[in-house]
Image (cartoon, rainbow, N blue to C red; front, side, top):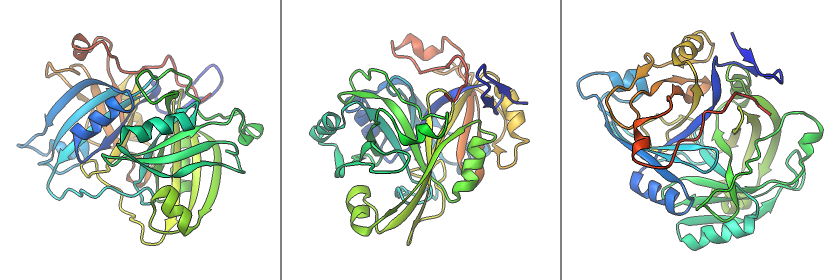
Length: 363
């Protein structure tokens, strides 16, 4: 049974507090960690690995990967309002070609800034990004006034820098709001405010919107469509051809906006990457009660819980962490977890994970 906040906003996953972290599988973990810490000002919280179970099918049951897969993991504090988990897998039958932004499974991280030009200049000076085109301003629609640009990092991640307009047209039509980070991201790009949004390309937008605004407890903020000609697609998106993109912005708890896009492009990949493939990804919800959340998810149409809730009791940096993965519609990888205060990693660094938030609320 879902609960509601004081504002009356429904929370579907029982005991959910916030989106805890975003996770991506990369080709080279060291390069990714170095970029995030030196260019974006992230802080390493702990490292794990190898995570493997060579004598059983545990990796398949719990993580949805080949039973002989092995992972190295780094968890980072990613600005004022997010945590970032990076994986490097070795696995039989691993796909090492990450999906393009226009493919199903494509994705990006959106860093919101108060001065796009200043932040972009600093990113260029790092020598570690490919800047796609020039900054663009949305000229009409629900996001009129936003300025943005895409960057490709030297480790394969797509980052969007976005400067939000002070007022956006959609705000006249709904009480829903995108998350506007207002933090001071020390050590990051100049004027970086936080992770304002994350983007994922899906096969069926209506299905994905129904799932994330229904059982996942999100709130639809706006939908917008865009047709992109071949030249703009190549220059601004590094895409292989003209495409049409339909996007839904969903506020998912107190500090997260998820942008789901369905992209029609000739020759695009339609097979979502697995967790162990380069470009695989998931994100996780912090919940107060993992067992209760998992039992509820097991009865939700479109959700599939992988294995059973797990408790880490190895004496390592996250001893006491309780978690379980699940899949959403279209095979979207997700997780619920609970980390009690006073985790062992805290004895070795002054940096701390973001969260949990006092309560789940979409505005």
